[in-house]
Image (cartoon, rainbow, N blue to C red):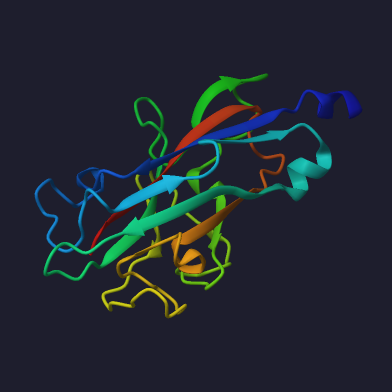
Length: 214
């Protein structure tokens, strides 16, 4: 049993991407910026764009691994002249599609027999988003994507305008992390608990954080 565990290796890697060009966000086309100034409204990534999970021990595979504060997202938004900026922040999952099933992680390398274990699905990854003012949807609560390529989770997405400086849930008006750090800086934690049912191998996905107007 000891030797078998030594060869049971699971490696999960995902790449963090941000869309600061708002026209690249799903559902928003070029030329639709009427509320926020696209030149002065940005989303930035503080840490490295890669997050890796390496499972080689029994307690890790069954108990999981948490990567706390692996991603920090900072927002800066500014009104267009004579307009009131109102924005939303959404994250999407991508498995690079191609030959990959739309429900699964992209399998880069397999170990052992192809018949042993199952390919992990996209809902295996758990994500928790929070900041000082707890402005995010489901702030501080672990969430999962649906097991479907392109699935999304809201961070800020409210039809009601909540201005900066209020330190309330769903702040989504003009402001920036330098003057309103507790509202415009988001810390993202990740957790994976694979269990022994997963097929040993190397898997990857992409997480996209997208800032756009309401």
